[in-house]
Each structure stands twice: as C-alpha cells, then as structure tokens.
Length: 350
Image 1 (cartoon, rainbow, N blue to C red):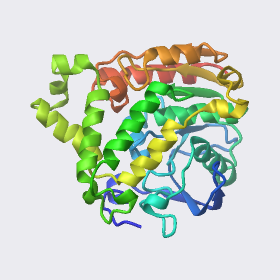
Image 2: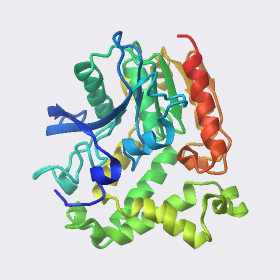
Image 3: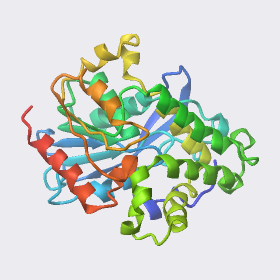
C-alpha cells in the first residue's frame, strides 16, 4: 500500500465501508478482503421505495457528485429521497491499487470490470439496506457505464435511468483515447511497471495525462472564446495549471489506470453474446439519455444510436461549451440544464 494525503476523509468527507469479503471478479480472479466505500444522504422510508443510486466517474469519488447535485430544493433532495453514492473499485477509497496490501498492491492489482462494480453495489443496496427497487440510477461518463450496467443487469430494480455523457458500450474511438491516456502515464521513467514508491515518482506521466485531458475534455469553442475566464481563470496557462493539472496531479497513477481499463472494457452486450440491441432491449427503466454537445469522448451521435435501441427512452442533449466536463457545472446554466432534466425524469410515472 502507498501512503497518500489525497485519498483522505479530510478532503473527501467521511465514508462508510461495506466489507465484501473474498470477491470473485469477472476475470475469474478473486480480490481478497474487498471493500466498497459509499456515502448516503437522506433517510430510507419504511416502504424502502425512495432510494436513488448515484454512481461516479473516472478519477472521481462520491464527493464529486454530492457537492454538485445533492441538496434540498434540488431534484436529488435528501428530504425526499435516500441517496446512495457508491464508490467504484480503483477510486482510492474502495479496494484500489493504492490501498490494497501485498500481493495485490500497486501494479499487481487485478483487472476489474464495470460489472464487478455493479455487482458490489447491488450487494450493498440489497444486503445492507434491503432495497428491492431504485427510483433512479444515474451517473456521468464511467458513471453512465455503470448506470447502463444496472439497467441491463437488474432491469426489474431500476425504475428510471439517467446516463450522462457515457455509452453502454465503449466505442473504438473512445477505446483509442483511453489507451492514449493510459500510455502517457506509463511513459514516465518513474512508472516502474506500476511499482513506484510514491505517486510523485510519476509526476511527468500525470502532467502528460492532464495535458491530454485539457485537449479533449472541453470544446474547441470554449478555448476560442476564452470562456474559461468566466470560471475565474486569468490566462490559458492559469486554466491548465489550476484546473486540469490541479485535478489530476494529486491522484495515484495505478488507481487511474485501474479505472481506465474498466472504462475501455465497458460493454453491456457481454450479457447477450455481443448483441448490443438485445442487451439494451432488456432495459425497463424510463430512460433519459443525456449527451453533452461538443463532447469528444462520447459524441452526441454515439448516444443517438444507442438511445434508438432503448425502449421507453428519450434523447436529451445538453448544450454547453464545457463538453465532457459539463457535469462539473462550471456555469449556472449547465447546473440548471442538468437539474431540469433530472426533475422532469423523476416526475415521470413508472
């Protein structure tokens, strides 16, 4: 295990932990003493029918979702709903390369899949809370991959689904992008096949990783208009340093690579022998498919093609200069657009 001050409850707030024991992964390997970190807001009612599950994205933790979207008067209102924010394997709090003991530590951490995250979350929801239905499952990017996995794997449990800026099956173009950002981390001479002694040994790789994200994470138009100034940045260098680099540099490279590998292998058609249409046809949830305009990771057209295969679904394109990072709500307009769609979806009868 590596000591780090980033994956701390001082920064991310207190978590609860569900001990999974010896957890068998989809690859056939077993993760001993596996754990799932999570947070909750609100109270589960007596009927246990007011639960929402909000999954998080690549590089994130539950903090990143709760601080932006959970609050009284918001669609995800803890006075009305019991909101569960699960971690995913590799996020630095749940079982991850950075916090797992020898012999599964660091570069030896086993490969995990989106399905492994969702099976662990399902155990949390059913075994800890006794919940048999979820009013809404939602998530952004890798959270959208988890949302689709939930809706396909457990169609009778999920009443509504809101996948934001993420697809049910990773496209070849997206796969190539993720491979690139894995490779730039590994290009650092300090990488040492994942057995570095300190994340700072891989600082150059993390800087290159942040640079790749700065190119792909927002739209060309945002840069052309210098719209980053509206978010409080004084220059392009300031934006790159205080936004992109500040986000990724504190993180553990192995943890990022663990999540990236899952991202690349996200594919609900694994349930149906590679038939994506058959997999998406399993979804019973009222589904809003919500791409962000200008998103270069998950372009709108990729969502259009998948949404056409989902029964009882709607396409809701959210316009923003922030591309994939619209979910960070860097503008009040972005926050309101997302809230309006969630409010509308939660009002729909199921």
